[in-house]
Amino acid sequence: MDRKQAVKNTKRAVIKIGSQLLEKNGQIDTDFVKNLSSNIKHLQSRGIEPVIVSSGAVLAGVKKLGLKKKPTSITEKQAVASVGQAYLMQIYDQIFSENGQIIGQILLTIEGLRERKRYVLAQNTINKLIEMGVIPIVNENDTIAVDEIVFGDNDFLAAHVSVLIGADLLVILSTAGGVYTKSPEEEDSQLILEIKEIDKALQYAKASTSKFGTGGMRSKLEAAKIAVSHQIPVVIAPKEKDILLKIFDGELAGTFIHPQKERKLTKKKSWLKLLSAPKGRIIVDKGAEKALKEGKSLLPAGIIDVEGIFSKNDVVAIVSEEGQIIGKGIVNYSSKELKKVKRKKSSEVERILNKKFTEAIHTDNLVVF
Image (cartoon, rainbow, N blue to C red; front, side, top):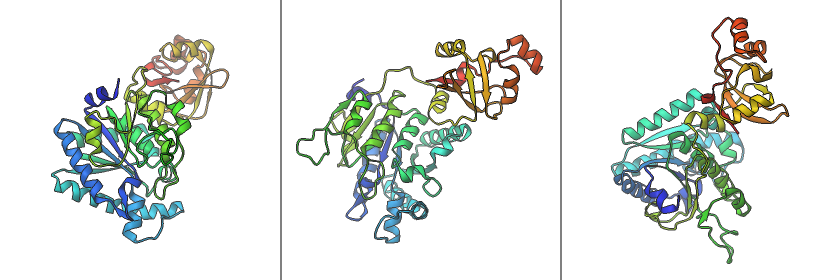
């Protein structure tokens, strides 16, 4: 899939706005937000469903409070973010409303998305907003979260949201304007128009040294790996007038990152792979490991040992005899029950537990790495 084909096929797009893009001459760049609103209205007229992931709560809080510099401690950043989030959404709401657009605020944390129920609720809410013609604006809940305030500037959140809602394209707008062979300021530095292997491109990426940004190009590429692994192409593009229109017209703006050609995971398996937190470990034998890699379910007979305390429907890590994590899955038995029936055949499992036999983990509820 090339760039023109990717944007032509896009029905749902996630647009990530970094902190640096929202700042101009020491203030919030309202001209940029106005142009963003105008571009998005054009995209909507083409039938494209936009979702914005916006950083900038700390930046907006600094401006609103009249602080001379960005706070350094986590507690200060969270407090400033609580002021800035309201101010930032006020700016978005005012500008988008003037353009006849309705926005809705979604505050998420990566920690919250690790819980399956919250993941599905977030998914349903964003889908309902889109169905209602509302433009969701997603931000990390900086008042209670730590990860994105310290590292990532919402790059990872944007990637996870893209997977969460089944986006067709992730656009990351960045002051760097794309991936370059060297620092963009150097004369012999060249823009890389397309990337097929992100790991090779990481050699060109550095962490952020900006005043308000926290991610840098490295975090953008690491986040892009999540999206492209789910067949979602990524464009890292510059802050310039009508940039979204240029991208969706198929122009060579920024860096296009090709999606991987692996089989697409279901949304449940995407959550399992990327976000779920195992509550225990199941060690399996060679035969079970081979069966799992062939797409089969995990049976109690293939379980060597069980570690940790977990309940039915909890997530566990699946571990090989050598101690390597080979996958994750949602169990049909508690740890107490599995300890009783490990290495047992189906007839023995039914007799020991006095219940109808089922797989330890069904293939629909497991992902193998």
